Length: 585
Image (cartoon, rainbow, N blue to C red; front, side, top):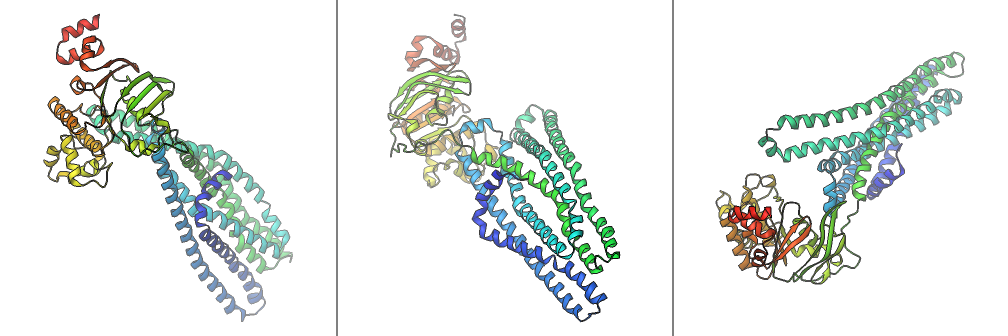
């Protein structure tokens, strides 16, 4: 019913609580044994007290039954609580490990995995593991123990009658096996559809402003309805499997009561069994009946657990492709010399960069321009080793980035990304994200350099203003300047500004770059931009097209060449006639 791999995986987490688990299972065993007391003594009351006339035994028997029931209730409370504590501890550890693993995985994993899938694994799938440990595990053990104890007592009373009652158990086991084999694929489909449904919801919530701006509410409802229908249908498909077997399993359990009355009554009439023994058998029917009824439900829940466990363990088994060598180079400080030697890179089978070569000296500013999709952001992603190049090598201070300690490398680089993400925190908390121990003066300094201090102070709560999710409530330019301040406060050796000033006006952009130049003369700076005004003062300008460097040099040199850069410059300068002539040529 449950694979060895799943049990082995979960056991790695449960074994931390193995002492508590063993104690709990012993308590379950004791309670299961105590469940046999009342049925056994009921038969004694009939044979020895009612029919035998030993009325003096009644108070003692009743006292034992009441005492056992009380103790059993206390022990049952204890072991159920223990299993809940174990389950909560296990899923806490699993959740911690899964989240820690997510922090280690590469950009490529998140590029290829839906957010809804990850959220489902971190919530619903982990909850299914908790349910398995808190209930399925002990219920399976409890029902097995009760069944075994009942069979032992029954055999001790009447061997032949017990064999008759147990004749139905092979059929029960066969039906449980069929249920297990047929229901597992449906549960895997249910978990997959649930992930897709969550992805649609998460995407819609994140993009709700776009939805409303384009009046696409009906389209989004239709898209959600499609996934909701698929999720419902997968659940119905699963339900049809177990509804095919569970009624039969339940019915087999009910047949036992009928067999007990008919066969047992005949044996009493033929004096092959006493009435008291029949009462004991009848009282123990629950010990045979309930486990048989529970087989289907436990199988059902066990298969749900297996489907969820596969999803969670898949995250934990995933290994990052970007990782340290066994003995990485751990430089105390990075000066900022960057060198690309014949670098090529592909996303899967799609080539993005081809034969990129350039050298940047420490403290120099490099500008990268080019049309959308030309590979500008990919270059800086390779510098920070978010991806590894397929061919060639990238050197920082003469050391291949693949040989450097990743955390040290990235600590020396600050990136104000094109896709700005601000946390639901204060403005101060967002700026100081990379340097949590930064003083307020340091935060304000970074905000001043990024030309953000003035608008931050205009808010009623200033730097203590809570920013909404992803910076909701701020303009695009305000978000860019906060993201820039966050990068500047890190005081990196290499600063990357990925289209960081595209949402601010030209005057503000000029002010920011002028301030940056005075504050960061010793920092190697990469500027990705579309405006010539943002890049013309760079020490080196790289012009990319279709993943290749088609031009490189300083502003005046590129203007003199009258190539792609010159054409962009003429367009932005307003000389459209000259630019159009260049395009025709």
